Length: 313
Image (cartoon, rainbow, N blue to C red; front, top):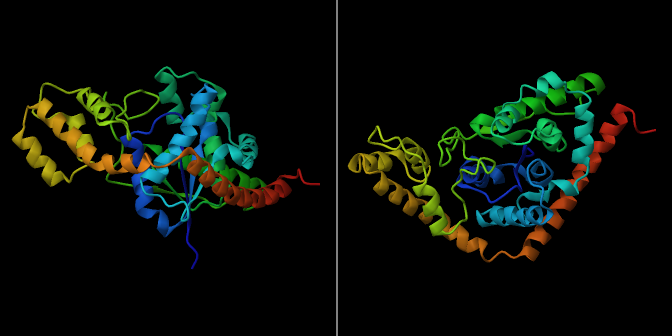
């Protein structure tokens, strides 16, 4: 029996953070060998917020280094760069012509980011359509997402259904794969950890950078336990250990933050060391090989799609 297809990706919009690790990278590492897995660097998605070419180029390199440093074997997953597979944008345009504006206006992520001050550009608005194309182009069966990202899969299913109803059954309806124990990882301000909100604990920052971020986590002085610190801490240790620690140091917020810093360091230091030995040339080779595999699949899919919509003569 052939394996189910799994696809996930991360934006190359900045340094990754521990929310990315627990929400996407760690569950991928734990499960990707069970699937026919594809791992995408979502660089065109990053254009909704990154406007500096040199920064975007470096971010692309950095994301792949992060993928490799956490233990992903490029021989067991297709690691590729979204922008090198032009069929993503072609399929997104076809979906743009099927999905309605009122449906896109329901997007939680769009409304939330605009409320936080991000420019309301058209790319941010149609972001879910490109994401639907990313997913559906490869006949993806399952997509690992955070608890707050279910709607992205709903958009992909909506696009697939609209197309299938109009042009025949060409797309599989993907299912979400959610890591229940993680959910939403809070940032240092208590909101969802996000590069866009600048409230992150860096995944591969130095110990000093991690310490600075952790010591900045907002706390509620009315209780014995800093809830945002606790929510992050339980990602690094089991709750039995955490409960004992927080009971012993009830009300001692500084001591609890210092304990969190040490536990974060114990987890990420070995990966940080591994990352330091990955060169830019290593990354380019991985992306070249992965891109060839992704393009072969995308090109085959789009031959069928073009025929169905009527642009092939």
